[in-house]
Length: 255
Ligand SMILES: [Zn+2]
Ligand SMILES: [Zn+2]
Image (tube, rainbow, N blue to C red; front, top):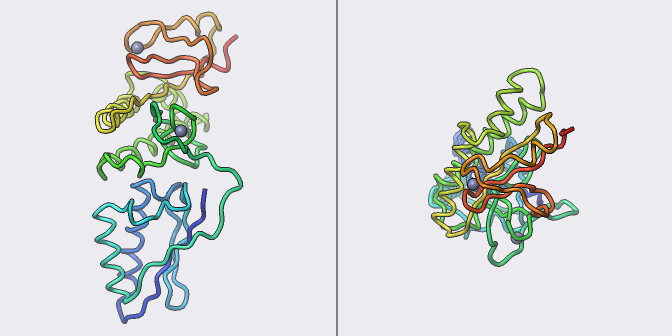
Protein backbone atom coordinates (compact mmCIF):
# COMPACT_ATOMS: atom_id res chain seq x y z
CA UNK A 1 0.00 0.00 0.00
CA UNK A 2 1.07 3.54 -0.68
CA UNK A 3 0.82 6.79 1.23
CA UNK A 4 -0.25 9.61 -1.05
CA UNK A 5 0.04 13.31 -0.47
CA UNK A 6 -2.73 15.09 -2.37
CA UNK A 7 -2.46 18.87 -2.31
CA UNK A 8 -3.36 22.10 -4.04
CA UNK A 9 -2.09 25.66 -3.60
CA UNK A 10 -4.89 28.21 -3.18
CA UNK A 11 -3.78 31.05 -5.46
CA UNK A 12 -7.04 32.99 -5.49
CA UNK A 13 -9.26 34.84 -3.01
CA UNK A 14 -11.76 31.96 -3.04
CA UNK A 15 -13.44 31.18 0.28
CA UNK A 16 -11.27 28.51 1.90
CA UNK A 17 -14.14 26.72 3.59
CA UNK A 18 -15.83 26.32 0.22
CA UNK A 19 -12.68 24.79 -1.36
CA UNK A 20 -12.06 22.64 1.70
CA UNK A 21 -15.59 21.18 1.65
CA UNK A 22 -15.35 20.38 -2.07
CA UNK A 23 -11.91 18.83 -1.57
CA UNK A 24 -13.29 16.60 1.20
CA UNK A 25 -16.09 15.45 -1.12
CA UNK A 26 -13.44 14.70 -3.74
CA UNK A 27 -11.65 12.45 -1.21
CA UNK A 28 -14.89 10.55 -0.54
CA UNK A 29 -15.42 10.17 -4.32
CA UNK A 30 -11.99 8.54 -4.54
CA UNK A 31 -12.83 6.20 -1.63
CA UNK A 32 -16.05 5.11 -3.36
CA UNK A 33 -14.08 4.25 -6.50
CA UNK A 34 -11.55 2.18 -4.54
CA UNK A 35 -8.79 4.65 -5.49
CA UNK A 36 -8.30 5.44 -1.79
CA UNK A 37 -8.78 2.84 0.91
CA UNK A 38 -9.43 2.66 4.63
CA UNK A 39 -11.78 5.64 4.55
CA UNK A 40 -10.53 9.14 4.06
CA UNK A 41 -8.31 11.05 6.49
CA UNK A 42 -9.20 14.63 7.32
CA UNK A 43 -7.58 17.23 5.07
CA UNK A 44 -5.98 20.38 6.47
CA UNK A 45 -4.78 23.82 5.41
CA UNK A 46 -1.15 24.88 5.87
CA UNK A 47 -0.34 28.41 4.74
CA UNK A 48 -2.04 28.72 1.36
CA UNK A 49 -1.95 24.99 0.68
CA UNK A 50 -4.74 22.46 1.12
CA UNK A 51 -3.23 19.06 1.97
CA UNK A 52 -4.47 15.52 2.45
CA UNK A 53 -2.56 12.34 3.32
CA UNK A 54 -4.39 9.24 2.09
CA UNK A 55 -3.75 5.54 1.46
CA UNK A 56 -4.00 3.70 -1.87
CA UNK A 57 -3.46 0.11 -2.99
CA UNK A 58 -1.10 0.88 -5.88
CA UNK A 59 1.39 3.56 -6.74
CA UNK A 60 -0.78 4.70 -9.66
CA UNK A 61 -4.18 4.30 -7.96
CA UNK A 62 -4.79 8.03 -8.42
CA UNK A 63 -4.08 7.97 -12.14
CA UNK A 64 -6.49 10.16 -14.14
CA UNK A 65 -7.32 7.06 -16.22
CA UNK A 66 -9.33 5.76 -13.24
CA UNK A 67 -11.32 8.95 -12.55
CA UNK A 68 -15.06 8.74 -13.20
CA UNK A 69 -16.88 11.74 -14.60
CA UNK A 70 -18.01 13.02 -11.16
CA UNK A 71 -14.39 13.00 -10.00
CA UNK A 72 -13.17 14.75 -13.17
CA UNK A 73 -15.81 17.48 -12.83
CA UNK A 74 -15.00 18.05 -9.16
CA UNK A 75 -11.25 18.24 -9.82
CA UNK A 76 -11.81 20.76 -12.59
CA UNK A 77 -14.02 22.88 -10.31
CA UNK A 78 -11.47 22.86 -7.46
CA UNK A 79 -8.57 23.65 -9.80
CA UNK A 80 -10.50 26.56 -11.33
CA UNK A 81 -11.38 27.91 -7.90
CA UNK A 82 -7.75 27.73 -6.75
CA UNK A 83 -6.04 28.77 -9.96
CA UNK A 84 -3.72 25.77 -9.59
CA UNK A 85 -3.47 22.04 -10.31
CA UNK A 86 -3.94 19.30 -7.72
CA UNK A 87 -0.61 17.58 -7.03
CA UNK A 88 -0.30 13.85 -6.28
CA UNK A 89 2.86 12.59 -4.63
CA UNK A 90 3.69 9.11 -3.33
CA UNK A 91 5.52 9.64 -0.03
CA UNK A 92 5.94 6.08 1.17
CA UNK A 93 4.85 2.47 0.94
CA UNK A 94 4.33 -0.60 3.11
CA UNK A 95 7.12 -3.20 2.83
CA UNK A 96 4.78 -5.91 1.53
CA UNK A 97 2.34 -5.83 -1.37
CA UNK A 98 -0.79 -7.95 -1.50
CA UNK A 99 -2.02 -6.71 -4.88
CA UNK A 100 -3.02 -9.09 -7.67
CA UNK A 101 -0.84 -8.89 -10.78
CA UNK A 102 -2.75 -11.48 -12.83
CA UNK A 103 -3.53 -10.43 -16.40
CA UNK A 104 -6.98 -12.02 -16.15
CA UNK A 105 -8.19 -13.52 -12.85
CA UNK A 106 -10.21 -16.74 -13.30
CA UNK A 107 -12.64 -15.58 -10.62
CA UNK A 108 -13.13 -12.98 -7.89
CA UNK A 109 -14.13 -13.23 -4.23
CA UNK A 110 -15.99 -10.47 -2.41
CA UNK A 111 -14.25 -10.52 0.95
CA UNK A 112 -13.44 -8.41 3.95
CA UNK A 113 -13.19 -8.57 7.77
CA UNK A 114 -13.39 -5.96 10.51
CA UNK A 115 -9.59 -5.87 10.58
CA UNK A 116 -9.03 -5.73 6.82
CA UNK A 117 -7.41 -2.48 5.74
CA UNK A 118 -6.91 -3.22 2.03
CA UNK A 119 -9.44 -4.02 -0.72
CA UNK A 120 -12.86 -5.61 -0.95
CA UNK A 121 -12.30 -7.98 -3.87
CA UNK A 122 -9.81 -10.86 -3.98
CA UNK A 123 -8.45 -12.66 -7.04
CA UNK A 124 -9.51 -16.30 -7.39
CA UNK A 125 -6.23 -17.12 -9.15
CA UNK A 126 -3.60 -15.69 -6.78
CA UNK A 127 -5.74 -14.82 -3.73
CA UNK A 128 -4.47 -11.24 -3.62
CA UNK A 129 -6.46 -8.00 -3.73
CA UNK A 130 -7.89 -6.68 -7.00
CA UNK A 131 -8.36 -2.87 -6.91
CA UNK A 132 -11.96 -1.98 -7.79
CA UNK A 133 -10.96 0.60 -10.40
CA UNK A 134 -9.46 -2.17 -12.54
CA UNK A 135 -12.99 -3.43 -13.22
CA UNK A 136 -13.79 -0.79 -15.79
CA UNK A 137 -17.21 -2.29 -16.56
CA UNK A 138 -18.53 -1.30 -13.11
CA UNK A 139 -20.47 1.96 -12.78
CA UNK A 140 -19.82 4.46 -9.97
CA UNK A 141 -23.04 3.11 -8.36
CA UNK A 142 -21.74 -0.49 -8.54
CA UNK A 143 -18.50 0.53 -6.83
CA UNK A 144 -20.39 2.56 -4.26
CA UNK A 145 -22.55 -0.53 -3.47
CA UNK A 146 -19.38 -2.57 -2.86
CA UNK A 147 -18.04 0.09 -0.46
CA UNK A 148 -21.42 0.14 1.36
CA UNK A 149 -21.46 -3.66 1.63
CA UNK A 150 -17.90 -3.53 2.99
CA UNK A 151 -18.92 -1.00 5.68
CA UNK A 152 -21.96 -3.12 6.64
CA UNK A 153 -19.86 -6.29 6.78
CA UNK A 154 -17.23 -4.63 8.96
CA UNK A 155 -19.97 -3.37 11.29
CA UNK A 156 -21.36 -6.90 11.69
CA UNK A 157 -17.87 -8.35 12.23
CA UNK A 158 -17.22 -5.57 14.75
CA UNK A 159 -20.33 -6.57 16.72
CA UNK A 160 -19.12 -10.15 16.70
CA UNK A 161 -15.63 -9.22 17.88
CA UNK A 162 -17.00 -6.84 20.53
CA UNK A 163 -18.96 -9.73 22.13
CA UNK A 164 -21.30 -7.32 23.96
CA UNK A 165 -23.89 -5.69 21.70
CA UNK A 166 -25.56 -7.72 18.93
CA UNK A 167 -22.89 -10.43 18.79
CA UNK A 168 -25.30 -13.18 17.72
CA UNK A 169 -27.08 -10.92 15.26
CA UNK A 170 -23.81 -9.79 13.64
CA UNK A 171 -22.54 -13.37 13.39
CA UNK A 172 -25.80 -14.51 11.78
CA UNK A 173 -25.62 -11.72 9.20
CA UNK A 174 -22.17 -12.95 8.12
CA UNK A 175 -22.91 -16.70 8.33
CA UNK A 176 -26.47 -17.15 7.11
CA UNK A 177 -26.88 -17.39 3.37
CA UNK A 178 -30.36 -15.83 3.67
CA UNK A 179 -29.36 -12.82 5.81
CA UNK A 180 -29.79 -9.28 4.51
CA UNK A 181 -26.00 -8.80 4.47
CA UNK A 182 -25.38 -12.06 2.53
CA UNK A 183 -28.15 -11.34 0.04
CA UNK A 184 -26.71 -7.83 -0.51
CA UNK A 185 -23.24 -9.31 -1.08
CA UNK A 186 -24.53 -12.08 -3.37
CA UNK A 187 -26.41 -9.51 -5.45
CA UNK A 188 -23.14 -7.56 -5.85
CA UNK A 189 -21.28 -10.77 -6.85
CA UNK A 190 -23.93 -11.52 -9.48
CA UNK A 191 -23.65 -7.97 -10.79
CA UNK A 192 -19.83 -8.21 -11.08
CA UNK A 193 -20.19 -11.49 -12.96
CA UNK A 194 -22.83 -10.04 -15.26
CA UNK A 195 -20.67 -7.00 -16.13
CA UNK A 196 -17.22 -8.61 -16.29
CA UNK A 197 -18.05 -12.19 -17.26
CA UNK A 198 -15.88 -13.35 -14.34
CA UNK A 199 -17.42 -15.68 -11.73
CA UNK A 200 -17.53 -13.90 -8.36
CA UNK A 201 -17.80 -15.88 -5.12
CA UNK A 202 -19.41 -14.86 -1.87
CA UNK A 203 -17.90 -16.00 1.43
CA UNK A 204 -20.01 -17.24 4.34
CA UNK A 205 -18.43 -16.90 7.77
CA UNK A 206 -18.41 -20.03 9.98
CA UNK A 207 -17.61 -19.91 13.68
CA UNK A 208 -19.75 -22.48 15.43
CA UNK A 209 -19.07 -24.68 18.44
CA UNK A 210 -20.26 -27.92 16.84
CA UNK A 211 -18.70 -31.37 16.25
CA UNK A 212 -16.22 -31.41 13.34
CA UNK A 213 -18.01 -34.35 11.65
CA UNK A 214 -21.26 -32.35 11.67
CA UNK A 215 -19.55 -29.24 10.31
CA UNK A 216 -17.92 -30.98 7.34
CA UNK A 217 -21.16 -32.82 6.51
CA UNK A 218 -23.16 -29.64 5.94
CA UNK A 219 -24.26 -29.11 2.32
CA UNK A 220 -24.21 -25.91 0.29
CA UNK A 221 -26.89 -23.72 1.92
CA UNK A 222 -28.27 -22.68 -1.45
CA UNK A 223 -28.47 -25.85 -3.59
CA UNK A 224 -28.03 -28.45 -0.83
CA UNK A 225 -25.31 -30.10 -2.93
CA UNK A 226 -21.90 -31.26 -1.65
CA UNK A 227 -19.33 -28.44 -1.43
CA UNK A 228 -16.56 -29.68 0.90
CA UNK A 229 -13.21 -29.49 -0.94
CA UNK A 230 -10.55 -32.20 -0.78
CA UNK A 231 -7.91 -29.52 -0.49
CA UNK A 232 -8.27 -25.95 0.68
CA UNK A 233 -8.70 -23.40 -2.08
CA UNK A 234 -6.23 -20.49 -2.00
CA UNK A 235 -4.97 -21.87 1.31
CA UNK A 236 -8.11 -20.72 3.13
CA UNK A 237 -11.49 -21.93 1.85
CA UNK A 238 -12.73 -25.46 2.77
CA UNK A 239 -16.14 -25.27 1.11
CA UNK A 240 -16.80 -24.12 -2.47
CA UNK A 241 -19.95 -24.44 -4.55
CA UNK A 242 -19.23 -23.51 -8.16
CA UNK A 243 -22.91 -23.69 -9.04
CA UNK A 244 -23.97 -21.14 -6.40
CA UNK A 245 -20.65 -19.21 -6.24
CA UNK A 246 -20.48 -19.65 -2.45
CA UNK A 247 -17.48 -20.26 -0.19
CA UNK A 248 -16.98 -21.05 3.47
CA UNK A 249 -14.47 -22.49 5.93
CA UNK A 250 -14.50 -25.26 8.50
CA UNK A 251 -15.27 -23.71 11.87
CA UNK A 252 -12.01 -23.10 13.78
CA UNK A 253 -13.74 -23.98 17.06
CA UNK A 254 -15.21 -27.40 16.26
CA UNK A 255 -14.77 -30.17 18.81
ZN1 LIG B 1 -4.44 -12.48 -9.15
ZN1 LIG C 1 -24.67 -24.63 -4.12
